[in-house]
Amino acid sequence: MKKWFAMLVVVFAASVLCLTACSKKDSAAPKEIKIGFNIPLTGDIPKVGEESKFAGEMLKEAINAAGGLEVGGQKYKLNFVYADNESKAESAVSVALKLIEKDQVLAIVGPNSSKQAVPAGQACDDNRTPMISPWSTNPDATLNRPWVFRAAFLDPFQGPVAADFAMEQFGAKTAAVLFALANDYSKGLAEIFQADFEKKNGPGSVVAFESYGDKDQDFSAQLTKIIAAKPDFIFLPNNYNEVALIVKQAHDLGWTGPFMGADAWGNSELMTLCGDDCKGQYFSTHYAAAGATGATKEFIDKYTAKYGYEPADVAALTWDATNILLKAIQDMGSLGNDLKENRKNLRDALANVAEFHGITGTMKFDAQGDPIKCAVVVKINDNGKFEFTKSVCP
Image (cartoon, rainbow, N blue to C red):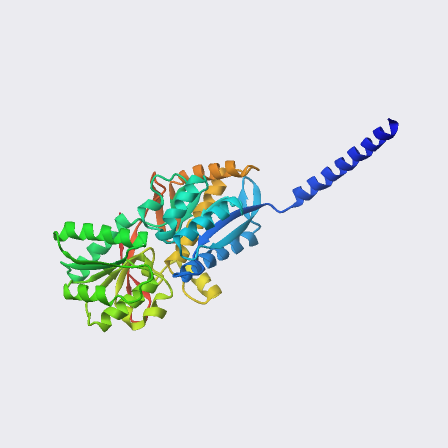
């Protein structure tokens, strides 16, 4: 009996020593905040993912170099997990679930394109994990989803901006639209634009309303119909890679009139793909790099020096979206050991961000988690730069 008692004493002592050592080891481990990025690093729009990642890295490096993000008097290192959604809706959902369940992130930045943000937003809302999309403009991304937020204006605002500018700049009375049927962003914005333009110019003033499939590369059939309808301009609510093909093919078919584009034009790769064909055209977007001042210019200069090219709107919006998230984390006041509780507290803090001054403008947030902010219209000048033309505010 004494022998067994002695053995128990030894085991107990060893356990205490182990627990003490483990406790010391845990307390010495660096504290971190893990945030996921659900972005398209491959697929149709890889430049969008690249710019989001680069903006995220630049911000993370700056904060970590200063010792981390301070929350409630403690500093936490930032750990950003970048996951590729392949520019696909189904992959965006899979990535969201992986980041939530396997990587155990506190929150998710992205997806960017509405085609991915709408379904991924449902996954995040269902799993009670805060998500903020930098670039998605389709209302459905956040609609009735209390866990989903964004840093971009919405298409019900952008559509009328495009219509009004075209009427003013081109004296347009008629319009044509060519959009991607399987893309929530493109289809939704096309429909909003059509309704607004016909409200202002009468039924039938959108003289052609054409769509194309997901993998289409030849748009000649649709463009032939559009040109035959003789619109005053063509509205293209399309991703930059498709815009380059459409504009070139329209010119090859004899179109000499203007185009009006939307924010998905605003990528640094547009002019590489489109060249002279896109010069002189206009599109609505979130900020203009040419002529920027203050914090916006500082961001552009640092990004350009670090990565070798001027950042497009998605990079600036990622910077703002991530900073909104970090501000909300600080507003929480503290971080506990319960991830689910931390996610809930972060969601509440995001919902209480009444106003944010970002490099893409000042934003006030409504009950849906959508920012009320200005849009800008830019012209692609003779040097291929996106030049500020005008600002339009709600």
